[in-house]
Image 1 (spheres, rainbow, N blue to C red):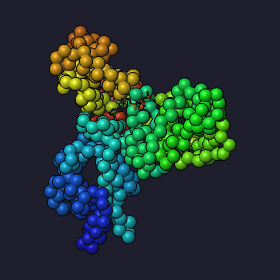
Image 2 (image 1 turned 120 degrees about the horizontal axis):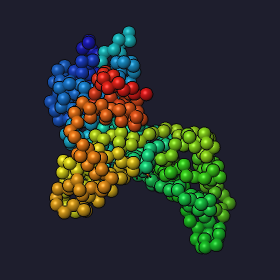
Image 3 (image 1 turned 60 degrees about the horizontal axis):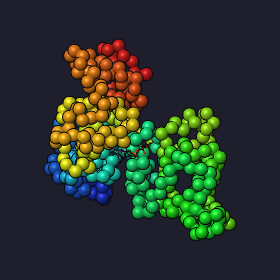
Image 4 (image 1 turned 60 degrees about the vertical axis):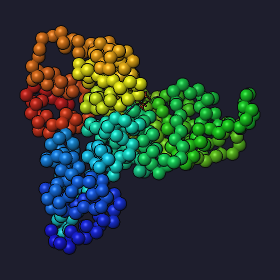
Amino acid sequence: MAFMNLSIIQSMIDALDKPAIFIRPDYSIQAVNRAYLDTYKQPVKLGHSRCHEISHHLAEPCDRHGEECPLLHCQLHGRSTSVVHVHHTQAGLQHCDILMRPVQDEDGMTLGYLEILNKVEFAAAGAGVNKMVGVSASFNRMLNLLNRAASADISVLLQGETGTGKELAARAVHDASHRHDKPFVIIECTGLSEALFESELFGHEKGAFTGASQAKKGLVELANGGTLFFDEIGDVPLNMQVKLLRLLETRTFRAVGGLHPKRSDFRLVCASHKNLLAMVEAGEFRQDLYYRIAGFPIQLPALRERPADIPLLVEQFLLTGTERKHFSPAAMQALCAYSYPGNIRELKSIVEQANLVANERQIQLEDLPQVCQTGVNAQQQTEIRSLEELEGDYLAQLCERFSGSFEELASALGVSDRTLYRKLHKFGLRYR
Ligand SMILES: Nc1ncnc2c1ncn2[C@@H]1O[C@H](COP(=O)(O)OP(=O)(O)OP(=O)(O)O)[C@@H](O)[C@H]1O
């Protein structure tokens, strides 16, 4: 590459306040800015150091360790990409949203790739802080979507089974948005009657109904400037959905007993554990309302799809106990093997219960609730099975249960697409 090009690129990344590097297709770093050096505190030898050595402390590119490589993606598709990785930074392990951009000369020849990094402040790769915790590939993919949604003012729809962290994700979108210093207001839609719905949302004037001795602001007005979060939006009855649609289309409303319309400026985030599109098909949810709220739909993975996060979440939930305890290897194995229909909420409650029940500092298998012990006990009573047989059974289960794409499954398992294909072939399995 011409010296001129490199010096232009160097000045370009020097002007950025985010950590940035310019790399070649062989991952070697050709230019680096001050923010990058300060973030990683690793000596970078221009032309020699590779990005994965600095950010991951790995001798090989990150896709060999179960992550998606943004450079490979750029090469394959010829356009920019963004992905969340866990990096070793000066402040410890940190989720970083990486934006990777191919840089071309005037003839369209790719000269290299510009990598700009953005810390994901609302997530943590270690226990201890009150953030969204996780390190698995499917968790990181969700963070990437939450981060993108946060930077726009688009309506976000969070869908996922109960206990997958939808409320936490809604808060994350708010905290990472430009509205973060304004209110985050939750409307719990389950069990709202029509009368309550109107007065809770829109407020009421003094004397609007018996007992309304004072005027009261509604939640929509309180959310002005901030974020309005409708939890379990699928529970809003059809007749109230029309009123909601009007509010969302005009951002205006009228308090109960009020004469004049009021306006509120809010970012909308909704959540549901129900399949809203199926409800639209069944005539139980208005289609126009669905498209109004689903500007940016995000699916939250079930805990059984991200088993790699269980030990970290367990560590996080143990911190709330009065005494520092830990799980025995057998108990941890049982925790990792259980299927968690109640997802993270269920894991949290199991850990808290076991923590209370255990008399010793080491929590034993017997201290776990029965549901959690069953799978492990059944396994222990049977004769020893070969690792190969277990691998086959595990893959067969995943083929039935995993809801992502083939590539996502390979990445969650930490193997290449080719390895997964070979293994499935070996056990006579097919993935959808
Ligand atoms: N990534 C995470 N890291 C740490 N704690 C989490 C994470 N995700 C969820 N939790 C915890 O799990 C519990 C359930 O989360 P949350 O209430 O956000 O789930 P939900 O999907 O909104 O549930 P529901 O569908 O029942 O409303 C909470 O205590 C939350 O703090």
